[in-house]
Image (cartoon, rainbow, N blue to C red):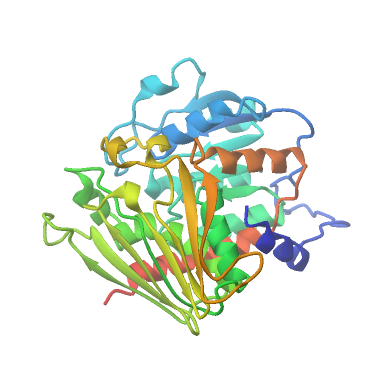
Length: 388
């Protein structure tokens, strides 16, 4: 998953903790070690997040990688959510208390799916106890709070995987690599959307609970895959236009346009809550050609607890990266090149399968990802607070 970037970052950022002597006031968080060649014992901590059900189903599919040892019910939380979760979906697995997870169960991985507003606080508690995490997003309204948690994980080698849902998408990763490697020349424009049509009638109130509304809730996914095109260079400027979607109250931040300016590239990321989620698209323009991908996934295979039934609009079993070139760039030829990928049968399984390999020690936990995710979070918050 974007190995072309993470291998380079691994060489540049690898840390050594050999020879450290801890004093009486030392950090009590243990240094993480791989679990070896066995299944990882995993706990789902929280079911309120919109992606919780999908993550749980992905874990159930990955029977060679994970043993689900229980789940934590956070449905009594007063935090904002679009609707209450379905507890029946998790029956048949042990219901655990939070304190028992850290002191008695001691799993190999905790998948954190609490509400958006509680993600960082819960994850910090888990990080302090030394447990690897798959943590959903967004990553809170404070860059400092998330950075403290991330820095703690990095200092102790604790795997921290953020649930950016397109990170394991082969078609998107192909488009990013083509752009990064200069196949379309110098990239000067990126345009993408994360439109949807779920969560009503509560969605305007839900979006208004966060700075930037839909920009906060969704634009981070596009920022996350766009950054590696520029070797994670921070942009010069980031700002957003925030409006109500058609039919929503005037105060609703449900229609957002985020603009991100690199030295020679202007990216625009749109989110409208009255849109068509199965038709999300990506376009990347360069001086030698253009890359297009639409749709970005087969929505029939996406589990979303608040989604409308849009299966009739999901019309693909394969994803096609369309590469238009002004001249031959072997192995690609001038004109249209179609690069096809089988649509994955699960949006989240690929990322969780990679994490299982990290937990077993088969592949390194790349420290470059810590810095990458901090940058993505910083830019995402800039998009929410710098409003035109």
